[in-house]
Image (cartoon, rainbow, N blue to C red):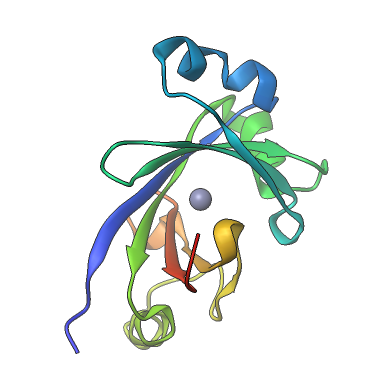
Length: 138
Ligand code: ZN
């Protein structure tokens, strides 16, 4: 099976969704879809772009959330990029076999009823990369 990759979204760490979304609303991106992802300790706000990619704003819901730590260290800004993949489990297995450092060796539930996993920036050249596999309608 040929693997396919699409840009799914760009994740941006914000102190709060209301504050962080102001610019994108001014820009005219329309309504923000808000969803809480308890496993990642974040509230996400999604703006849909015309090519099906999205801008994802991430507000931490707990002080020990990875996004809270990111904000503390670096302030608001690009936190990760997410690639949509067709078979997340086989990709994770292949990456692990090649010594790539994974945050999640098994996929976990993400927003929009997706399975997600993060690849550690140490193995990617400094960018936190999220893989996401859709499980039907998002
Ligand atoms: Zn994301």
